[in-house]
Image (cartoon, rainbow, N blue to C red; front, side):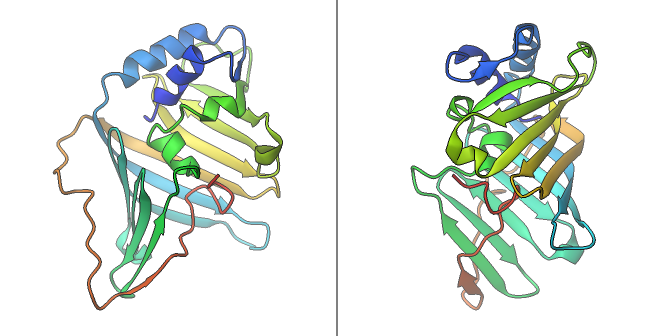
Length: 224
């Protein structure tokens, strides 16, 4: 899935640091990504928060439309839909009759957008990239991004990404500096399904309460 970011790493390697020997893998990921216009997948979200005894697990369906729209439709029991674009994030809770809307300033980027919606042209300036297991060079592979700038080192320890046999990213694991873990796993991935043009349009009913406190998919520190 979400793969354009690795092609950016290949092109702009002088900004980030790419482990030697990853060039062929990056090219293959770039080739697979060039075929993606829309995408649909089931997702599992898992949060391991140090202040909580048990992890938080949520499921749902993910939709992507290049270049600037994605949607997380959580399972009915979670009563949550999230839409993210380059301008704002919106969440809707139908049963609770409440919504949250957060504008994304031009100089503030949501990590979810960069990792999932391909906003990764600037990410390569902040992270180095390498293999988790340097002996594994075929089949599904795990890559690790480590922050190289102090501001991000204060937020993240590392980001791990799994690339499947089709050179699509199907898992993202973010480890915050405090040890909290935010993980997103994709399955049943459909490349270029038909998605209605209005899929990503959200109207907030007039009787809903509206706030601006949205929890980022990869944790509170993932907007930067």
